[in-house]
Picture 1: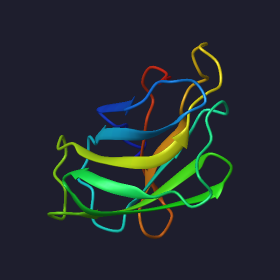
Picture 2 (picture 1 turned 45 degrees about the horizontal axis):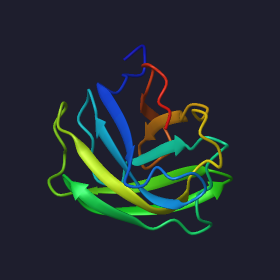
Picture 3 (picture 1 turned 30 degrees about the vertical axis):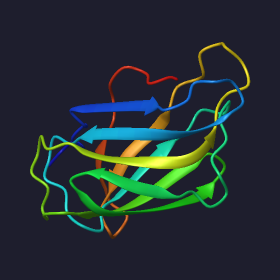
Length: 135
């Protein structure tokens, strides 16, 4: 492989859009390659939002567990355990992050960034190169 595959689609939605309030953020990811249990997903939240210091994640689709940590400010790291491994290319997986503090302003946030997946050895296996995602 000479280049890192990109994700087919990514979406981020919140269950509460009130400024300065906390919300659950749902992240839907459709990979363009097979992914396996213990792959790790990274996403940098916009600076205007605030991740909890110990983020809690719950599974929505295609996962049996999503173990979340925040190794640095607003960076979410998710260790993935798929319901069926490998997860076939084109199959969406989803999880929710609880208690993210929304931006204090009505202006659109800066973009989510650093969206990528790594294998259990830290090798990049996929990244997002599409249009900016904002809330």
